[in-house]
Image 1 (cartoon, one colour):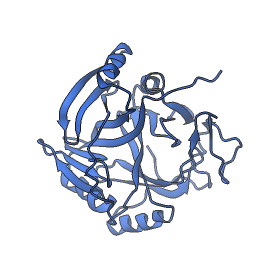
Image 2 (cartoon, one colour):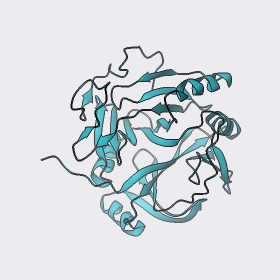
Image 3 (tube, rainbow, N blue to C red):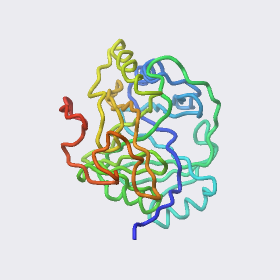
Length: 297
C-alpha cells in the first residue's frame, strides 16, 4: 500500500542569502526582478517582498554568497514548541527564536546537515506593499533547489519528518518534493557543495517570459538557458544568474499534483498517461529536444 503523507508545512515563503555585494544584489532583486524593499535589519539585512508577505527574499551582508536560511509556513494546528520537540526527537538540533527578524515574531530554526538552516513559523506579517509593474514582476516564490553534501539525510528529513510527497527525480541528482498542489516546492540536489542550486519565481503568464528576458537583457543579464519546457514538472522555464552567480528560475505552467491519486492533472503535453512520479533519464531535461548550452549546476 502506498504511504500516505500529511505535510506539516503548506508553503515556502522566503529564501535568505548571504552576499558580499549587497548593493548590486539589491539592485537586481528590486529593479531587475521587481521586489519591494519592506524593512531593514540591525546588521544591514534587507527584506524584500513580491507584493504581499513581509518578505520573500532576505539579503544578508556576508563574506561570500551562501544560503542564510529558508522559511516555511507551518499548518495552523502545528505548535512551535511541539514541533521543535518532535524535530529533536528525530535527531535534528534546533531552537525557538523570538523577534529574530522583522515580520516574524516567533519561529523554530533547525540545523540540518550541510550547514542548512531551515526556519518554520505559523505567522508572518503581511504589509501588502503591492505587486510592482517594474522588472520581471513575478507573482510568487514557487520553489527552491538546494545542493547538499548530505542529500540523503536531507531528503529523509523532508519525507519522513515533514511529510512531503515525493513527486519526481532525475537519476540520483535531482529529487523533487511538494507539500501542496505544486509539482515541487523543494528540489534536493545531491552534490559536492552546500549552496542554492536555484530558486524560482512564478510569472504572471507564459507571455511574461519574453518580457522578462527582454527586461533582463536591457540590464545586461543574459539568459543561461530557455525559456523552454521541462519534462519533469513540465513548467515553461528560463534561467539567469544574479550578480553573485545564484541561479534564478522564472516559470509558468507547472504541473498540478493530486496526492490522493499520486498523479498530476493531465495536460496535452504529457508524454505518459497517467503522469505519475518517476525517475527521468538524465538527458531528458528538456521536453523540446534543445540542448542545454550552459552547465546548470
